[in-house]
Image (cartoon, rainbow, N blue to C red; front, side):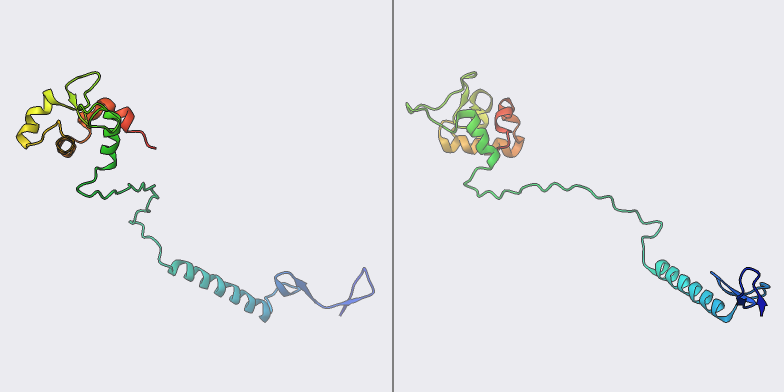
Length: 169
């Protein structure tokens, strides 16, 4: 043993460093250091193998982009019930009435050829209604012609009142 010049303590020829026990001359490591190093390297290899071994998306696979899906409301309508949009059209066109309080068929204020609950123009659609056997002056015939128009042309025949019946309430 060698004496320390600073103290009257004896020190060993080996010094403890953070990496483990090293001989003062720096010649090799102790068996504990080599064992710890092997353990750390083994752990790193196991973690790497675990990460690389998990199934991930392939390089060719595209990452899905989240999209907002708007669900449209499906309304099942019986044959004798009008779809909601047609109910709104009738409400806007004639305030939901086929006849006035005096018992006469409702006529259009801007165009007197517009007739009944759906204000179907007799000058334009009258001949087609007759071909189909619909009487535009009866509530049933007016509704049947409106269903025909809606099935074949959508809401186009009622575009003039679009601002009224397209409102979401």
